[in-house]
Image 1 (cartoon, rainbow, N blue to C red):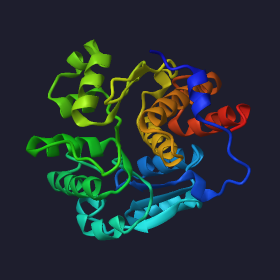
Image 2: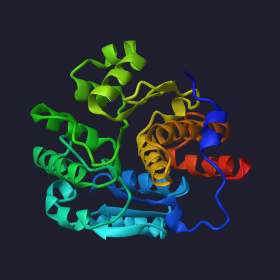
Image 3: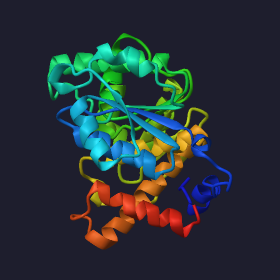
Image 4: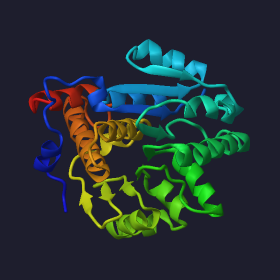
Length: 296
């Protein structure tokens, strides 16, 4: 079933006049590395611009410096640097002491494209953080690559709360052992099958993104355009999804609404800058306009 605007805005209610930052939850983003500073910035801005009450970034110093210069609203959790300037697993005790309600893991962490040592450290982060986290989580990008390798030795790593996975077809292929062509040939059935197997909401990205829940619910997104086909777009979506989870939307509804808004903002950005000229950070102004028009 295709997602409708009515479905989205009925789930995103106007804010109560006596709201405070605690009313809208908190997000802990474990993201970024020396090679991918922008991924962390886009993810945390996505969370902030979609309404999370508090957003904290756990990352290495060069990433924190870049993000704090752009987003003074973002709280910081300094981490020790490991292989290739990524987050060292030695930082796990500090990260786990954070008290946020939603965990976002993956954007810009680095993996085998940097080195085998970086991949091993990212696996250690994902393999420890998810099972130890008491709330719900969003797993994206290199977090998914780590999960694919971790699953070779066991089950999908899972937080104590609920889990949203946001793979593109290539990441889904690594997670499932199937080819991207096979996945794209039957996207809804594949997403539903693995949502049930992994007990997670699966956001299978691409043209007409599919959102599937373990209980069999499934929606196909009608918004978005090829202007989203560039690095950074998925980081924005991951942050937006984590924010709606923090705002206490149920997991499936949070994923469906985030995907719809992400695409709708992209359609507005394309109308101004063109599909070739728009950039992921252009989504934020368009997203704000959407919220303002709906009194949100």
